[in-house]
Image (tube, rainbow, N blue to C red; front, side, top):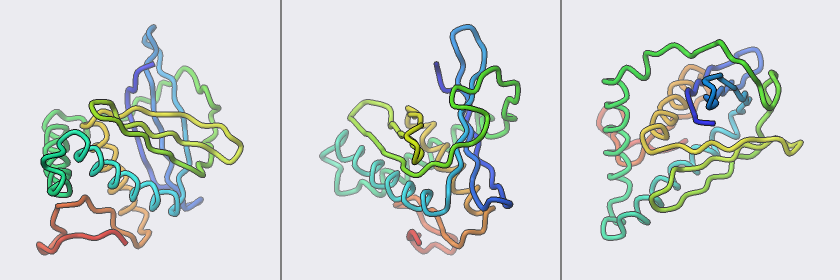
Length: 179
């Protein structure tokens, strides 16, 4: 199945982020997995995403490894800008889901393992304490879109943490740091 859409929304009654990923089967039907992400998991996931993005730059462009933070920031700006121009952030999440391979209830994610390889999509394996889970392969543009979804959702959640991309200035022109 191919990744179709991603959505992240803050669920205030549980103080968690509901992460939904839909996949399109060969017959055109949509299937969805749902995951509940805690503040602690998102904080650790974000650190891993940033480290992974920088490592990927170093693997794919060893001659530019010294500027990997700046390259990640530039890649992020370019990918997000292209997605906004293409209208990808304006598309409503399709709610006509035909199947839930892991059940309709969101599973509480306790670990998110990242896998990177040169020239390959970034892979995130989400798993619950019960051992259930799923893996998502994200191309560079989709990965940066996912990062943007997380940043906006954490901002809406008011979790008192800032998710910042390396090499990018925070409001006021000061380089941003992770909380």
